Length: 380
Image 1 (cartoon, rainbow, N blue to C red):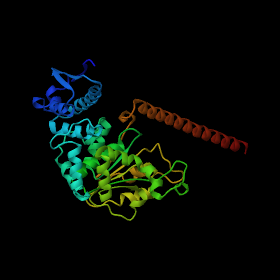
Image 2 (tube, helix red, strand yellow):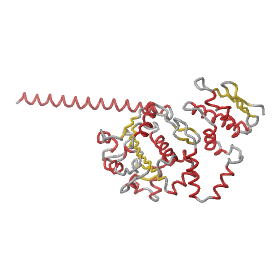
Image 3 (cartoon, rainbow, N blue to C red):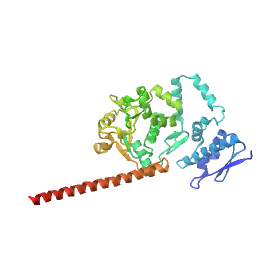
Image 4 (cartoon, rainbow, N blue to C red):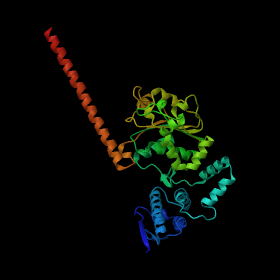
């Protein structure tokens, strides 16, 4: 097979040193992860050369890794330790990185065999504390940096950092839950809290849990799956399981919070639009010492039928109380597929038009009623 070359251009806004590191130390880490490739830098261009079908697959992965590094460099200069962390989380999953002293899957498996579960958790915590902080990057998920990307998300993250309780209200796709979980993971890894507690109300769309087959856990797990997925992205499935077995991370329905005081924890209530006012009060009064709470939801997606949504009224109820923040995310903060933002905006326009028609109908009805009363008065 002839040599194939992929070329990546470092954007003009970035100094190549912020991407490649001093003396190209970042590039050296990428080269060690992909030993079958030849990587050459000329000015602001990075050339990735492969000479076989196997190395061509690696070249595609290396291209993705370098693209992630460039994206992260917009926030802060990259360094070898940070890139090594990205590679360990991303490349090793695909068995690309070669084992060498102190690194690799073989060394890790031998180490896990020698230690019990408690020792493994202690080791994980120590490793997390030693991981370098990249300014603006909250944590890493599947090897990619997690950070606020829009003005609304930045205001949301700032509110979390400066308040004990933060409400995030906005449409789907704005990162309400994912950023909250990222902040929880970061606080846990930095040992600011001892536990992460994630909860959701188990409200069904047209179904009753009592009539569904299976145990209680089997019934509620589908409603909690998005929270498991976010944690797994950031911690890895094995590490997440160890923390959950140890009780350091808990994912449970909202009903399980009743009667508890949540101390020294980072607590997230997701899908809060489906809580009643009484449930919202119950949850907020679980707040203990050294605990931070984040409540997320979308008031346009309420599944409740009769009771009033506790999220819809909470801002009016808590107005004026210090150390509580409300972050309102908008359609322009949507970071999913571009169509999601357009769909949200279209529904907002539809709701506004429907509201206008409703008000006009009520006004017209009042005018007719007034006219009829006047006519009756004239007849008398």
